[in-house]
Length: 408
Ligand code: ASP
Ligand code: MG
Image (cartoon, rainbow, N blue to C red; front, side):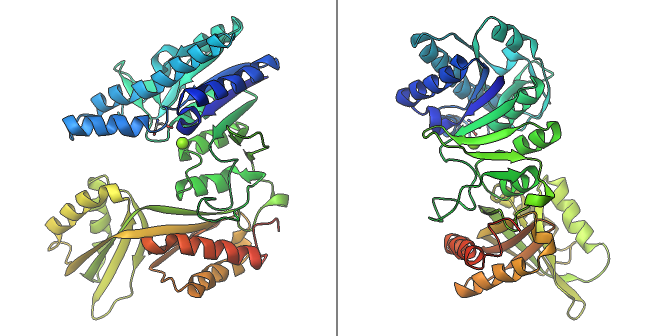
């Protein structure tokens, strides 16, 4: 078998963990497999590098930021090669350019365009374990690029697709994908399996276990994806094409605190106003998530929407500048909000899910500011300080009502 494994930053945080992971990798190899391993930077290395840059130049160019950040993953693969070699194995480390991971030009948020498999295949043929830096590639200018925070998962899945690997194993510090964040919800359960679509929603709604784009790539190329613990030997969670027979009513609850709400009060109720507001946001490259428009009162209406916290300053400046033209009488901001979402493929056909969710919020006295739904998810915008209590409450509700967290 050809196996691609990915170990996250916490799994390779120090020498002891590196040696532990080295043994795990060698065991896989000794079982007769070809092994390609993708590593993240150790522990909080990437945060540390960003902080270093901030000290020197808070407005550093994205090109130089990428040049700096790619070094974190290079440390990991080189150290891992040394660990494996010291234990009597044979490993070689390669960075994104050496492998030939071609990306788009966009520094700090590049997309993989193509992966050249030859170098890796040659090394595997020579009997080497191949260690590849996560989160990076090389663009059309021959410069190093990064794929965005958390991008090593995407590197691993893309490599698995390019090499036609039998499985892509993502090793992390939890035992798999849970029904809710196990650090917040004590009786959260590990899922044996979850569909690509559900995992995509959970990842984009704030579950941190997998980079959203890695799930997109896995779905597109039908990569068999396993999420496992690097510390304990346990079966983990398989992410795969969902079958109708086994769809979950609710497979998981996710929270995202990286949210800010903007409310535009008293806009003229006439055609074109929503267009003007969101055209302005698009021009500023601010992506907008939940949108809510009130009914009109005396020819005026309110429009509220959410954005990522990092975009709040840009959005604020643009809205204040164009307030008059947009006929907004008041702009309100709230950065202490969070999204709480329930995801499940079986939800679409079961109206009880939404009401159980709302009832759970009522039980713990949490006010709902905005609601957004799709076929397989319900998202509520609530105060950030309420999000942990609310997550426990909704998880309990679904469990006790037994409308969910189980197959329908
Ligand atoms: N080291 C990068 C980060 O911290 C990429 C990753 O870990 O996936 O975001
Ligand atoms: Mg990660």
